[in-house]
Image (cartoon, rainbow, N blue to C red; front, side, top):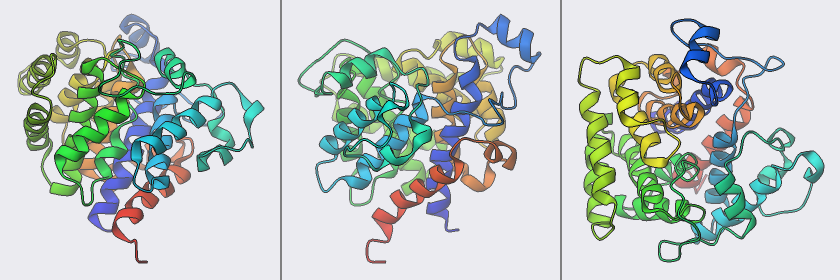
Length: 337
């Protein structure tokens, strides 16, 4: 497998692994987590009928990929249509087989409500019509950033600035607060820098700050976001317990905290996927989202080859996730094949 394809698959499957590890403890306190799973917290999957279930984070990531695959130039409109189709999967299996825009409406496993965010659902059911200029709410929840990794992969013939704006616009479909869509922009540029520019994680983070500062210098919250990302970078180099550092950064329910926790864990454990995702989920906050974004970053950097087989064997829809990741790669790099 070539290096680029390895990273495409690693990014999306890595996110799914982090998501599935954190999903069972998303609403647990640290006291509950450590009393149930021991002093190290959850370190292996909590299976449901033998399967490590993905949450809405990975579901929406897959619909993002499909929106990019189906796009013929207007990525935002394609993503909007796919997100509307995703919302129709969240009301149970009564819609299985319905006609829609997305190819994923054929996947019965996706017709399952996995703690979808209220802002995402309400915004999408109202048309997902937010833009960078038109606010539909004031939410900075992490539902915009957790689905954004594929936009960083979707890079060929785009500049880093274009990637930043595409990610911001995609996030703003549902989340109008600047910190929501600016966090998505930084995240997508991090992924693009790692995968397409072969940067290490720290270099990618530093470059993403430069790009977002240049693109969104006029936004009120740009420097607040940069401050928390730089704080995470600094904390990753200090001799602190992971929980102590994560408590400084937040809980991950809002986008900038989700990003900061993922930055911290990815930097501290840049050569150890397993340690990185374990650190990223075992806290009071939004464990599946911090796990998902950490998994995206580490998976993009290390590739699928560095994700342990034990995390892939029981992962829900693992084969499908690998296949759709390869389709995204092929759309950009094998158009004539």
